[in-house]
Length: 110
Image 1 (tube, rainbow, N blue to C red):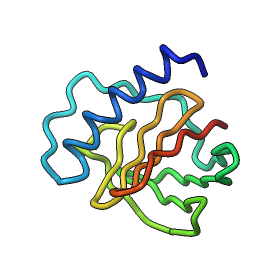
Image 2: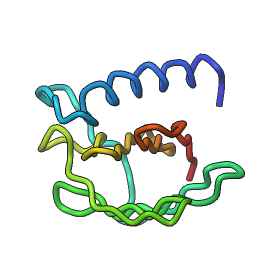
Image 3: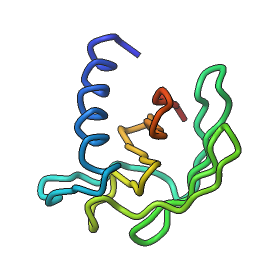
Image 4: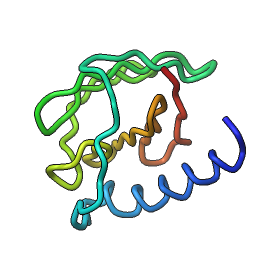
């Protein structure tokens, strides 16, 4: 990934982490549904694989660290950001950013 794109993703991630993880979310106007399959496996570099299954208003995630969690859309009704403390997931085309409070974010590609 180009460093400028990565910087943009980190900026979005910082905003998401500041809002979605503590539960202080705001409206979802302007969210655009990315073209994501119902089930996908993302490679997170040497950290392993992240598996994501889309559901109505939520996603089920199996992290590279073996955590299995169901996350609601955050805010409700949009299709790019999902979170519930201490986890968050952000879709960006063929990439996802996986957040766990207190750990470094993982950037993963399909």
